Length: 183
Image (tube, rainbow, N blue to C red):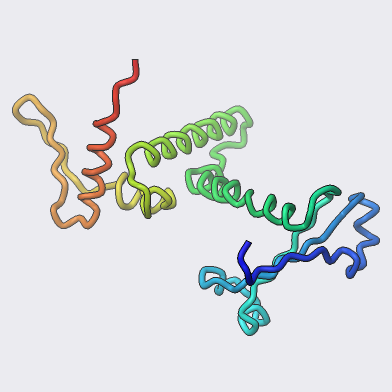
């Protein structure tokens, strides 16, 4: 935890009588941290004025220190990112009113997410592109302005010389080609 980040259990300061009957052992934990620039757009006026970001965590976990519960809660951020990326790949829109078709669609989206994760891990260097959203990867690497031709009994891919991410695409291609063939 950062030096200027604070965590406190504020359950005793709140009136939770309506909720404690529904959720036994309910605890409310407050996290107070500096307001980072990436959160400034979503911050309230009070948070902007104070330069601090406040978060509430509701949990029914009875055991555990407050700092541990806060760390456990923050460790689930990657799950939200994975759901966001799955929605960008098509999970947010089912193509049919029929359940079986939507189940197949969900499996295809999961397969696409796995293929994209493997491509990132195996072919992209650590950095901006490996962490990029599917939309950005589509724009820079997957939907490339190019021309496919045939000649000398081969297929040739002609990439535009002025495409800013041609080098990234070529590097990813060489990284993928350098992988050993599975046996």
